[in-house]
Length: 637
Image (cartoon, rainbow, N blue to C red; front, side, top):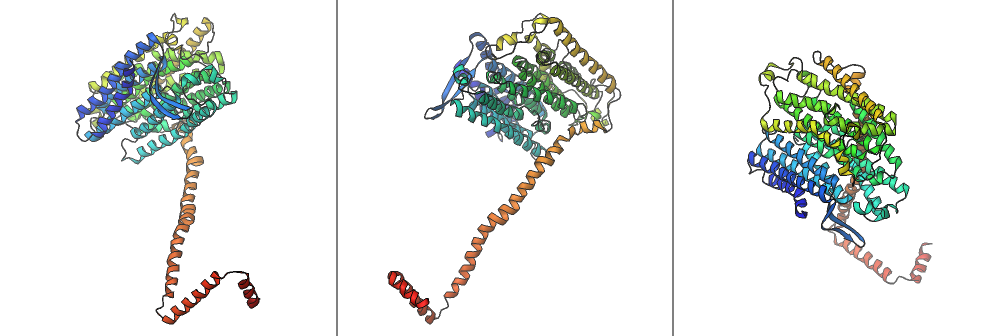
């Protein structure tokens, strides 16, 4: 079994090497087979490991001693427990479906670029697997940086477009801001306890060495890292711009992998977070604010992928709300269900874009349900799931977070329900505008409308099935279930807060949430199926369409001042001062040389005079003593 766990990340890495190094020599079928096959085999091994962990529990596999300096030691080791095993299934399972989908979606690329694309995907999955398998914070950080690099490469895949390059750089820079927090937390832990191993850091003996201030600072710094990777206020603006990448990349980044890294990190560190109420309040407030804020933006977006991007930011806010109120299982549960229906939504959007010849504005769509029957029904199921309608998967995970939020604070619950209503509204606005009513595109687009090939529709069908049934692993006791996922994760998420709510109250909370979502759905369908918004919004709608002008605000108060400062350092400090000193030294040497060469006049008399003067100077230096100084004093004073 120990060898199998090493194969899980190793196989995608081998796929990356083969496709990356041999990209000029391989054919597209071979490239797709290597890229998708490596992930599929990793998925099969992950299934085996999942059931092994379920039967035997935690295992730690040490590969080698990574850092050994005096008493300071860090092993390159993997930790396989219930949490990491669950994430392995999500990453490799959905990762494989996205690879399979990509084999058809990216078929128009030239073989070298096709191979480059699959190489990046494989490296991305490898980095994510390293992140969740690491047995200490350092290995997690290596994977953390790896997914950041790969997101930059994938977002800017079509690098000849400057806008895409800008989006890639924006994602890279904003992630680096968060990564500084993560890195400082690592240094703080090393300075205080001298270890980064989960088994040691989370043990009572080590925790006793940390003061309340230490724990609060460490957890806040880790949360800053999570804010960058999982796109929370104020480090969220990179995620919508990440839509510049190919649509399968959007599904990979926004659904099951990169953006959930912050959730995984906090869930993994639940022992630390449970010891700091300050940080937990901060996580809950930031998560709730992000969920509501991004939901308001989504209701006025017209780019099909931008709507889904802001939806992702909002759902991530829900997950952080769960983490902040101590519902760690609920947050991880929502990660799992969200992975299915959000991957389905993005891949469904890709199918629509594929049929519409790369058109992404939903105002130019409409009436696609007849031409794209599989895409239509699977997209509809995903919309129902994300809206939290029972018995779809999103209902169970979202309800668990809302129940925990209500037990913590009814205000949290109220804002959460309002956000859920907005979610149902903007998702069915998107659905109605895209699939219902009359077709509003060009005649050429309508003539070429067709369902996507099986390599794209099969992943849609599989994800649709899981979007419907995945929630049944977490049926709460109030509905007659025993929450199998909670029992499975109980040995890892040991700091889970138990909330005692009367069954009657739970029924009331569920009923209100579902009723409001249904009303929002009915209103959106009735409003947009026949009369979609085709004009540019005005007033508050324009503000929402322009994303509350946050990007413009960041440009004004951060980007432009930094560019001005950089220009000052470049033109004044570097060119005039530093380069001026260097250049003037060279100029002085040249000038001095030109003047000094005049000494070489060619006249013998001058040479004799210089020689005599030199001899006098040397004699004076040789006989330097007080008598000479006295003589000089009598002569000149």
